[in-house]
Image (tube, rainbow, N blue to C red; front, side, top):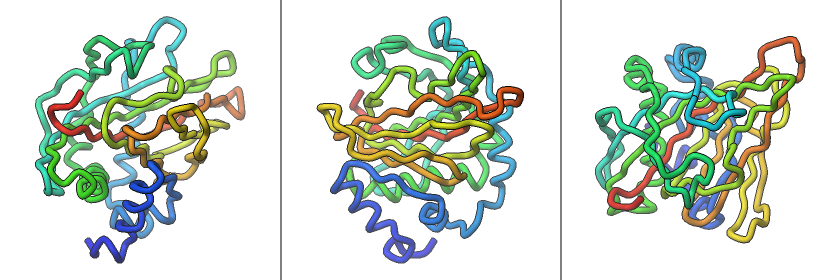
Length: 246
């Protein structure tokens, strides 16, 4: 990897520190991942979203989300990470009034995806970007593959809990694929609800980076463009939380 100053990591980190978030287009994001156009296994990585089980933890009327989940860890000052034993995802009701307060189990991200170059580069990017902002933190990392499906009779909601915080320190939302959907605009808000920025992740590698302690975020519902064809929005979400905080 080139030095951070060459690929633009330092100014991006400064932007997140200054504003609490950054909305990054693919042209800027690819070099940060060490990929001029794509990553060596990107096609297999993106295709794995076709094998996500339905998220049945949402209430009735919310059967539009598919997902897999993995938990990792990293030590302070290191860009390497370790896969932890499979475990549930948990958010308190303070952060997720819709389905918080319970341990939610999801099928794990498949081993060949976790072991691939794309996954490794993306997690490594998060550690290189956010690690220096909390240099003494050991990290609890969660990775979520999300597919939001849109149907003519029911819009898909990427954030059914509304504008929210995740209860972590930092968040990456990385666009993997959009097929036959409109809207799905990411919005970032201050504590009082004022919109600070918005950006529609539309191309692979478009990204939203969030300091979760400082700002809230949400995504508008997606609807199909052509009602007769499959419509979905695929993203990878990576969250970093300092161990000992919840």
